Length: 246
Image 1 (spheres, helix red, strand yellow):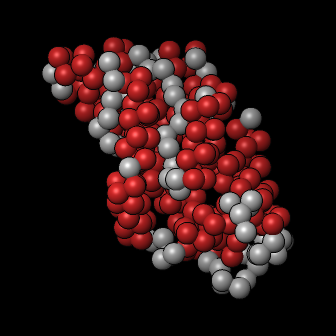
Image 2 (cartoon, rainbow, N blue to C red; image 1 turned 180 degrees about the horizontal axis):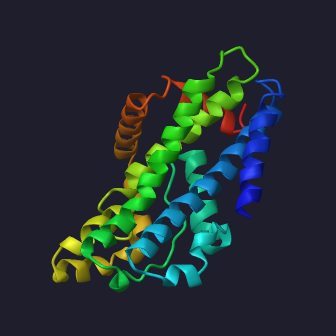
């Protein structure tokens, strides 16, 4: 399944270079490319959690099948696909998705517990850097046949940066909280445990506030540009993604 998603990502990306840049078909291909690439990144994100957990002492991740990159082991249809896709479409920001069950008590130290949580956002940052590296390596002219794919990759890199930053927020249920949780008091950890199931909802409510959403978008822009994202490219990719819009 993972190889199938990867093949779909590559195939849809290649096809964008054959469709006229202003055509509906090119936009549909960008939509498919972003969706497939997003699911690939979810698999990599969750695989990273599981691999670091294995290195830290939790062998149960092998039995659970988390090291096989099988999206069905990580992906929740609503939380990993529908909700992030809706939010990308209307909010323009990537949401965290997917989950692996790690037995923290089996890990050798608090540092390993933090490392397991950090592995996911680090993977998103790595994927963003690879994407931005591809942009710098291959480049494209705004009037060239490869510009649609160029803009789509720019949008995808922007989304990876946005989800990495969001996941690093210290909200219970997100990786940012998982990083610091081993180091807080037991009372604080117990109180936070009550909020964990609602962490994603808290994040959505946070982003629903227009002022905060705009401020967050500006922050992602700043980080993306600092990492080499061409100015304005992500916005072009975001518009191409919405194939149903004129």
